Length: 379
Ligand SMILES: Nc1ncnc2c1ncn2[C@@H]1O[C@H](COP(=O)(O)OP(=O)(O)OP(=O)(O)O)[C@@H](O)[C@H]1O
Image (tube, rainbow, N blue to C red):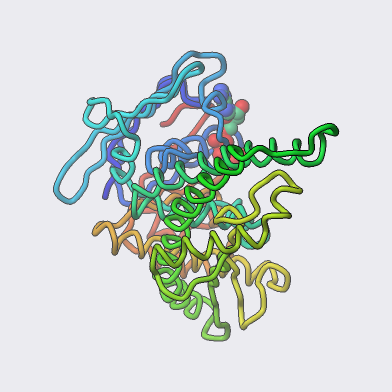
């Protein structure tokens, strides 16, 4: 797929900016804090409806303006679409496809696919488990947009169940006279248990499946980049275990564990069983990359993951996604840079941000479109 045009209105530091992309490789050149990452963020938002930098729409809107808009024309194999995302200071965001407002956000997801690679992605290895869960979830949303809805439902159930557990905890441990929980509250909890198991199993089975598909591709890339000296393994350590990809079995495993952890949940007043407690482990030569991997090994690992994401999305969607490289080439040594550039070749339309051009191959530069970013304007 190919991003042909982008129009940003009151988005971050772009007051009103239109750009036509005319090459397979686009280089955004500019000093720090001029708006390079902001532009990539706009593309990321169209692809995932999420920004990895903020969860608040207010941050995305130019100073104190009321509304921001990101509009793009995307050319696909058999169609061309105009995508519009409108963000509001007050009120909900809205999405439109070919200027027609969509009721469900899941219908918008999938119109554009992109893989983002920034220096923040090193947190994938070093950071807390939620970084890895979010990464897996973002990938799932792109290859199976309905997953956005599944995850939303799971989080809704989790919030409600947590609220109920908090009341139970209060009744059991804080209210001195009664120390009683009435029957209807226990019945309510049983209903939330069932919902947590049903929605949790949907999330967990999908995470397991996507990791199973991603692992051999990531291993292939990792093997290649590390010159066949290292063996990568991605292990999904789900919060419960099961042997077959069977909804009943996974649900039962969640319910069994809830029973087992009942006292802890009531004591803490929070849900301790479910996919929000999942972990994804990255091992290099059977050693956790997180605690033992050197910086170089961790970079190789993240690069292999990103290349695997690109390939998996391409296979599932049937078209190459966009690649967004945010200030990341400078962080890679020459060998890894070349690995990345030759993997991309001419396959993926790529937008690269950089503060200087001297590290780029001349041949590459010749076929690229270089745009200078200066305080929210492009030239
Ligand atoms: N909501 C907003 N309204 C106006 N300006 C904003 C808003 N959010 C961010 N900015 C401005 O955008 C600029 C940051 O841009 P960006 O993060 O794209 O930097 P960059 O060009 O990628 O540089 P770097 O190499 O430092 O990452 C800053 O000047 C910041 O003040």
